[in-house]
Image (cartoon, rainbow, N blue to C red):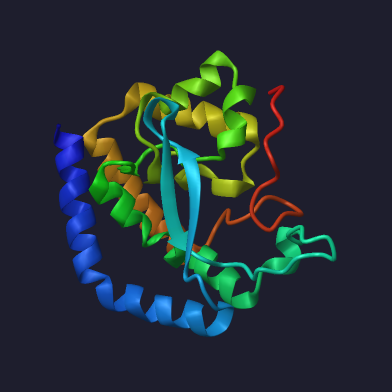
Length: 197
């Protein structure tokens, strides 16, 4: 209950205080990348229950001759890279937190297609609500291997507390300022998880 109260208060005041920043970013996304301004995608939440996660859009809608989206590296722009490295693209996620679909701190929500690929230990990351930031994010972010990322997620599940959440929030602010671990080697963000870890 204390964690949920922390989430509600932090997300409400975050949305309120950051509304001018959110408005400016939304305007810039529309001007540089067009519409839609928001990127919406169904992700697995608590106990794997699907929810619609929202972020600011960071890529162009560029497709090949067959209508398939081009690789991330070809759709990403300098502006989109800036939004990701500064974590400004994550600001709309505060609405997911306020609604109770996400927490401010928890394992990052991954793709629905990954659910059947997890082993029993990896699936434990869904014992808590997914987070805007998390223990893995402040300990390497996308520069981590999938195996290390899952170990850190499960460690958080077993050791979570309001004080750990506060620590992770402050460490996140530090990581955002130094822009560390934004992408995996040779990737725009992170390589796909294929199971077998």
